[in-house]
Image (cartoon, rainbow, N blue to C red):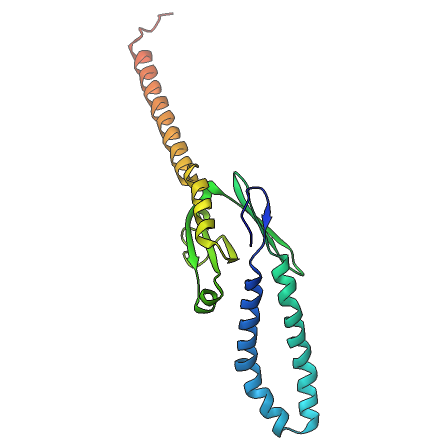
Length: 198
């Protein structure tokens, strides 16, 4: 990942693909080979063949999917929002305005640390009650602290959505209060007027 420029798309580091392949290798080693090798060694040939016909295409499909998925991911910072897209079969695009961002966490596991990459988990006002879930994740970022600082500069220049909502509610309450006072004054003035006799 090169220098991040406002208004230009950037992609995760190529090391992010390596991270997925490492996870894939661990999953294959622990989740598949621990039972698949004994089946090949001790099960009848017909059973081994049926299981191989089922399991090998899945392994191949995952191995082909990883680079396509990593290539499909793109992020873009604009002056007002973060735009992301990803997906091989199902394309997803999202937009997160800076004024909705409440928190940015850096997530880095042991393998990611060795590879020198991390993910930024960005939480927004809409997800404030769900701390475990983020509105957006920027995965496979090499200069993660630099990217976090860039986003935080944009966030600091905006009023949070919660503040805007609070101020609107406060203004509505003031208007209602003034209307109640006007009504009371009108009612008093109507009671004080002498009635005309017919």
